Image (cartoon, rainbow, N blue to C red; front, side, top):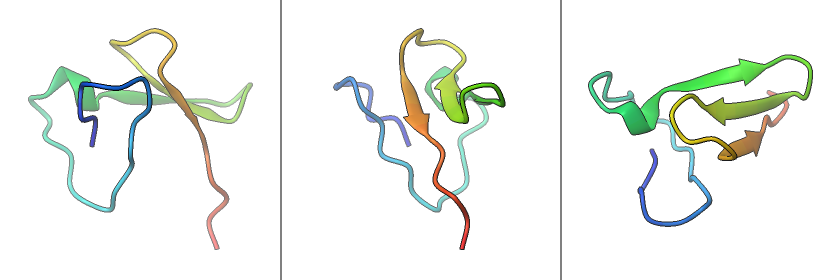
Length: 50
């Protein structure tokens, strides 16, 4: 969920709102990061699954 107000994003285990442009992310396989499609520079290091 992107709170829209700070340069970081908290990811929670909730369904995304597909109508929100703030919740569209892509996986960058080169860097291993999850990046916002609509907010350049907003990215999160992907956490390994357990």
